[in-house]
Image (tube, rainbow over all chains, first blue to last red):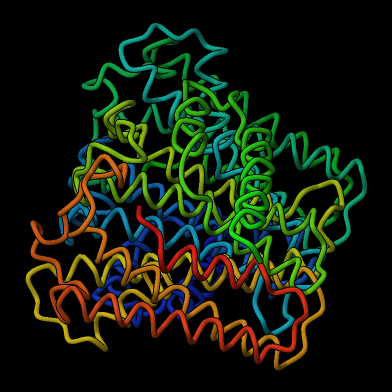
Length: 296
Length: 296
């Protein structure tokens, strides 16, 4: 797949997702809650999780209308986690995607409710009353999302992260933390998208490997960018992890070894796609490179 | 139904729910998150939402194992809302069910994650991998729970509540706020429980009326107790609403008129059950009286 073809595909999907999110995150939630929810979700972000879900759907020839709902549900979970993560009692960050964070713009109490309501809305999207999503698939998607978001997934990883400030984690412990904190939702993005179509056992196994490798590469590159990029490029505060004395792949391995590690993990992601036997993995391959070689 | 029979039934159901919650809110979520989640959920509360779900299940002859999952899911949503509500940026309460609130015991960041993880777990309970819940029912329950909890339900009501401090709401506006803030989840408790069995159109309509009336009675009595009971009896800080200059049924109607209003609303709840045509509504009747005449 050419760079231009991938960029065009990505842009088209991002537009689809933006439109769907704008339809589904309604302004009319009361007392300004809808407005604040839209502020938290719209006009921002790479939409990596939706792109993974849609590309995985296409790889298995799955149901696109269902995958779009899954894509948006995943993005809502991600968006809520950022809103809560940015709050003063967590990372106390004032800048996100180049804009004031939700609690800065709307107050802490409203930010708390925005995150809570976005999580509920994520599940609502998966079980529409219009029959778009067959019941068995809806139940499976809800289950996957709940597991990826909860105490043994993303929220659990955040708890480990909280507990790890100033602690000398080794590489396995650091990877275990990220496998929950960011990996679970990225992996769920791939598997939920792929759930919308038929999958062989081999394809399921290899997509699982792909999702895990992509999640790990994402985090290693995140740590690299935290020391190599500036805040304007990142759209968030750079150098936060070092300042907070948090363990990172760079603090553990050094910068160039961390960069080399990201490349090795990316190779694993590509190899898994090759072994999957799926015919239409071009966008998944391209997404791995996009994650692994991004500059923000 | 005699007072003693109802007390025995209630105690038996509370025990069932406590055991199920203890099984399902696992200690092994990492970095102390599981412990804090269990602290937030176990050994406390009247379990009103679970009792409503189980009684509604019995009223329609529904599936008990499914209703128990719905009951616990509802309680987890309620518990998460209390954890977040108690945080310093919301009500800043230090006492709940006679114990220090979660953020006092475990810190604000962990309390935020506890609430987030409990919400995800609520949905997880409704879609078990073991086939306990038929797919169509699982999808329906997830939808009902998401709607009741989200921006057009509980979280939306909390946003209205935030915006109403020091504002002179009239009675319709106050009732609209409570219909979302506490009413949506109480009504969902009745309807989710009843969804586990067959329901005529009449039964569905009248259970909806019952749930709405019970939710309103609950809130009117809550406001009455806020001025008539002491903190030790309530297990939470009394007099908070008046101190916070929040509109209440007592500030709007006066104490004795508020008490009389609660009685009238209770009568509506009972009348709806009579009209439902359902044969086994004894526990739902008794729960309405329990809510309307409680002392804490």
